[in-house]
Image 1 (cartoon, helix red, strand yellow):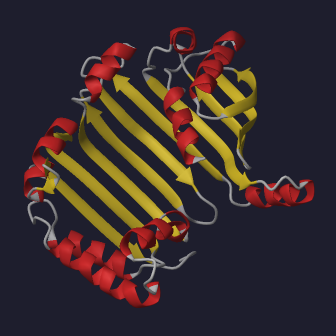
Image 2 (image 1 turned 135 degrees about the horizontal axis):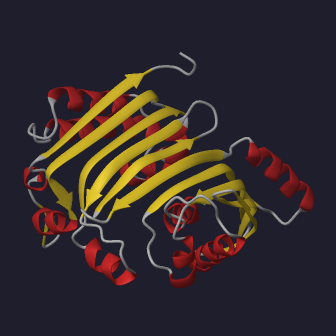
Image 3 (image 1 turned 30 degrees about the vertical axis):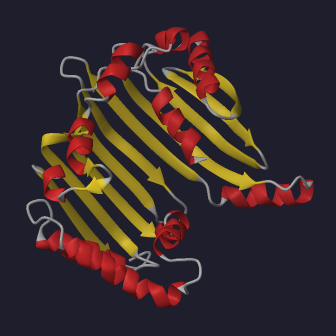
Amino acid sequence: MRGWVAALLIGLAVPATAQQSPATCDGSWARLSEALPVAVSAEIATEGPLCVATNVVANESFAQTRIDRLTWEGQGLDRYGDEGVPPRSLVLTVERARSVSLTGDPHTDYVRQAQARQEALSGRLELRWDQLTNRLFLDVLNVDFPGESALRMSGQAGGVDLSSMSALRTSLGSAVLSSLTIDVTTFGLFEAYLLERFVMMTIPRETDPEVAMPEVISEFARQIEGLPETSFSAETKAAMIAFLEDVPSPSGGLRLTLAADPPLGWIRLFPNWLSNGVSRDPATLLEGVRIRVEYSPRSASQ
């Protein structure tokens, strides 16, 4: 589900307008649907400046994703729908998105679909592009998970040219990240989305995770201690280690802020970080990059 929802977030980005026409909304939705990796159906309508998709359903093999309501707004949707020209800004909302594994048995699938509503996600994305400076601003990315878990993100990137598809493709290689802020509130979020991958990547199958995890955490802590102090302060390293020590069930607030001067980009990353498959000194990659991590452990509803 996360892959094609991400495509929704990018593909419907458009500037604001006073009133949308049904043809514009239909065209932009059709363009997006064609680009998605799965078959998607929806009921499309307009509400003032908003394009609205309701009863969104994406079917995969033995899986189904549903979104109760999507809205997007802006000027220039007609150009996106007609030509696929990259849009310049976005306000997109997603209400109650959830995915369910299907069995083919109507009774079981009915129950699972009802249960999935209790695990639904909602979110809001706001993007805008400054054509004078070729800067892309992620003003808001909010995702609300079940319970009290949530994700908040904002950032800025430079060297992004959305004037045409060819300009976008050309600019991707020189795009740079200048700032990023990520706020995560996790009460089961880490376990639901990251723990399985973390365990599979760090602990061999034949090893008992309960026995191996303390050593895994200790090794990560040693690596964190070795990070360059020019980019990671002692307080940041302590926060990162404290979060790791709470694995498998960290809970509370985690904030990461990144500021890069000069900005961090692909051209800078690969020539300096990889050489014949061998990692180079992280200080070379992180020159001018300041990363701050704050961790505030707490229980839910505190």
